Image (cartoon, rainbow, N blue to C red):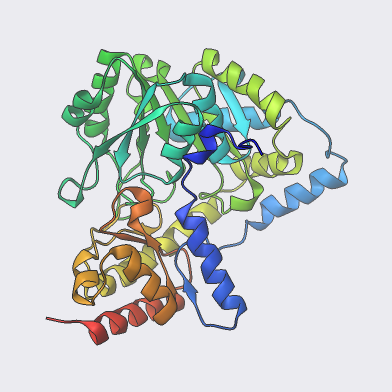
Length: 397
């Protein structure tokens, strides 16, 4: 039989996050008391006013197709949000609504990349960036950062990575998985390089509302009209409003990029889910107190869990500034407990300590693990206790 698979899918690496989450669920279904710290979603329900708006829209019969790029009313709510929160001004033809920020990014890469075009991806990175670039025929170009530089790349590193084939650079702030946030000064330096070399900036700001200890979010598109013109801002309501399953994200940028994204969506998805769009209108236009309440809850958990995690032997942890992840380097703990790799250490944590975390290899940092504190403080404390006991029981000097 002929080979039935396209070459582009043969290079794909399955999502590490989803794989660990699935394995943890499998063990739970067997009656094993597994604490899952893998999934990247808030543990709160979607706020009631948003649920009510969704039901109301259905009862009114708003259950049919919408424009491929999103309802005009939702685009306006996004425009108002960007103006209110980020001091950014956009028009309707500069906004596309998609089926989650992930699919918006996928669509973006499909329309901007030709075979061999390069996209600069800072390490650590969200697991889907390189896979989406490859699916579009592009080439991921990795730029390493580490804890010593707060997991943020410098302008000098960006400049060095640029070639004649470079099409774009991805900036994710606050970052998944590190939780670190670029300052205005750092973004200014990066933007200057992007302008100098005429490359696009893909600014993933999905965690912008989850910031701690007085850290503030700044969108790189705010720097100047020149920077804004070459920036595609990607965001959504999944993390900010605990709407991961509703699958609504958006991109804001140059109409010459947004239009082909919309055209592609018209042939691939028809439109974002209608009910979810009405829910998102309420999410942006309605009360925002629930957003702050969730942020405060995450910050409280971080303040409790961070010192306890740092006290585990062989765990070196940089305190995050945003999102809801911790990214400890556990290479020493893995070695001292008899494991050849952090991936093996993660497997043992799951099968022996019954704690599910994500190996950092999926994010380009194989010496680390990513754990989410988007779960109850009680479970977090128990998970850290189990990991601590596991490491201490196996430690070999």
